[in-house]
Image 1 (cartoon, rainbow, N blue to C red):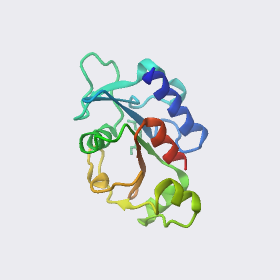
Image 2: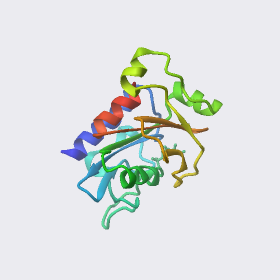
Image 3: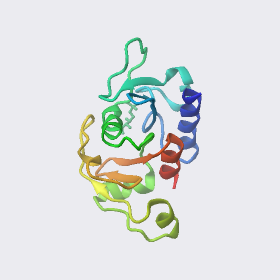
Length: 167
Ligand SMILES: O=C(CO)[C@@H](O)[C@@H](O)COP(=O)(O)O
């Protein structure tokens, strides 16, 4: 069930114009010690429930997984280790939000929809190389910009995190 839902959630990012080719990814917590995430390098139109990769909270694929987890797996794992309340993490290259990330500026809360969804503006964290997690440290809101890169959102479920990414 969760594999199917995670596959469908990835298609929502495509329909919303937030990702292209293989960029971006969605993950969902599974039990206390694992999460499922998009495989690395697989285009969205080739994603299937079975292609989702089961990982431990260090971001390591469990034995027997055929595909490599997304290159952002360590950022997702960081969130799941530090935020037991989080059930889903999303990373996108939203064209609009990524402009702010490229400018190194937070997105001010200038729309009621932002106040509703995010409770305020969207902060920006430092650039982190793949595997780094500095950007996400210390943020409590549902969304954060990674400078010069893109967007990360979180939610109690993967569906909630995707909603934050779309909003
Ligand atoms: O933004 C990045 C890398 O900078 C990733 O989201 C993107 O390349 C997707 O990589 P994966 O195919 O998930 O390994």
